[in-house]
Length: 105
Image (tube, rainbow, N blue to C red; front, side):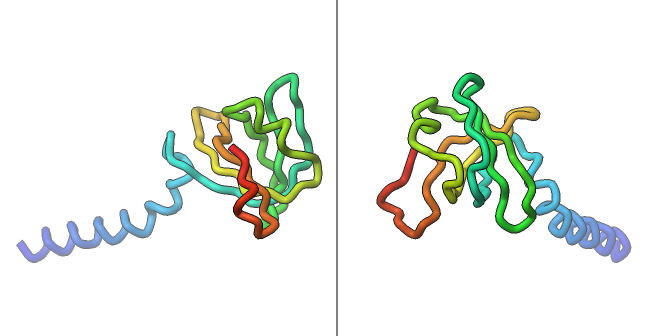
């Protein structure tokens, strides 16, 4: 019985430590990225953001086409998005200048 309890406890600890590593792959879970808008493509309803920390580029599909009209290239934004298969769907992009009243949806 002690062995079973120890194995179950160890499995729980491993699962708790491994869960954050798999969080990015959970569909429909909201994620955020902060960076600069490097490209806006109105024809495909997409925009690209280069993340501040890693300099990795992410291509987002705007949930609302009006989102693209409200942003400009070079703007520093925080994007809320969900992953649908291989696509990143942005639900919100707000300026990261410290002014929270000018949020964009």
